[in-house]
Image (cartoon, protein in one colour):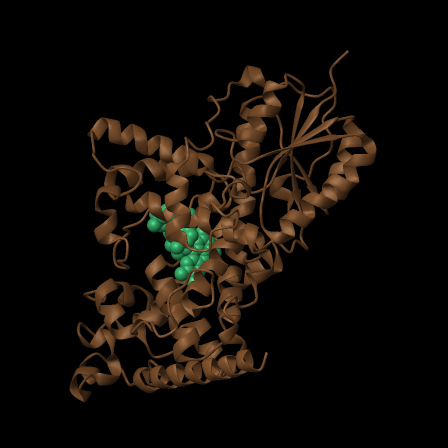
Length: 491
Ligand SMILES: Cc1cc2nc3c(=O)[nH]c(=O)nc-3n(C[C@H](O)[C@H](O)[C@H](O)COP(=O)(O)OP(=O)(O)OC[C@H]3O[C@@H](n4cnc5c(N)ncnc54)[C@H](O)[C@@H]3O)c2cc1C
């Protein structure tokens, strides 16, 4: 008689290699049923927007093909995870469900519902930590409190032994099929969501899937890694790995990145260590974002710094729309926001610059920016998105001080010195060159005329003055701080 099968519940771990839950299921030597549950009403922000939704569809097709290649199948069901897994388990007589953990509050809730639904059927759930280097629930300060600052957190992580060991590469003989495969929705059959039609499709710059993420990592290590520190903040060249969507969907895991990096280092006999490697430190920020959402889930949408509770926002709808559509009159902000809408992407420096502009120059609450990002980013991920926005707003557990306000003019000059990134995204400014490309409203009339730009007609004038809006923002913060201090005195 065939042993009872085990279900492997794929979530944001859409890969075969380096997937602890899948490897453990295969080691059980039982038939394995790989399953993905597509929940249209998911509260999970990873799959919320048009770009990430499109990515997911393509990635599932790749996963399905890879599993077919191994003689297996991907079963896709639509609905709620707990209901679908319960149904599948009774249909197939599976007695185990293996999965990799997620740590976002909505996902923890999903996991609890799954546990509750499967308990009465005596189905054993086995959870693994495959998408992060460290299990966030095992890391504490000496006083048993969780870390709040990145520096101390990462220093501690670097003293720990090897993170998760990587499982060995998979072989098709390891996959054993159940007697009967349950029904599945084909990845190609899934309707394109209505949101997808609104925004232009993923540009050719992206190829979702496990194979593509491995290629991208290799290419980055060969070409850009060496210059990462110098180029990571540039917008006119690709100075970073662009692996974040692949990591967000789990097409590659951080342990695989470290392993590949180690191999490259051995080849190059490079001397950088984990401690001084800027690229690895950025992976550390990803760990930290996951750590913070695990330990401070309630603070996810609220400010952790209560001074901001007293902040008087301007919250002007027209300004929000101008920011979202790249019509603020500040070319670097507009180029970045148009790039986001069109491709689902923006580099880290520009994410900081546009976030600072929204919060501090337009006085719009950070949550509105975070929502827009989570809708459009192809790597949208609740933990990193909230960490980033709260860092800029000055209300995270570890954040930039409120008075640090990015100057869009100097940032533009640094990140896009000759304006080629701006030219790419704002064709109406294509005839304007440096230095005016960074601040067209300062250009003499004859320069504007020659560039065929009539400000306010072809391209907007700035919606706020950078200098006065900065002063207004600092004054608003000062007032909020006064109210906060007064409140503390009374309590
Ligand atoms: C306001 C704001 C919102 C953000 N929202 C997201 C988001 O929704 N999803 C997301 O993955 N990242 C987010 N980030 C972090 C960061 O901007 C992106 O991870 C990074 O730009 C991805 O580019 P890359 O893959 O080329 O990164 P690289 O520079 O090549 O870094 C390698 C990996 O490290 C991780 N990483 C790098 N920087 C950060 C960071 N600051 N915080 C957390 N992880 C980091 C990413 O997984 C990235 O792929 C946000 C940052 C800000 C300031």
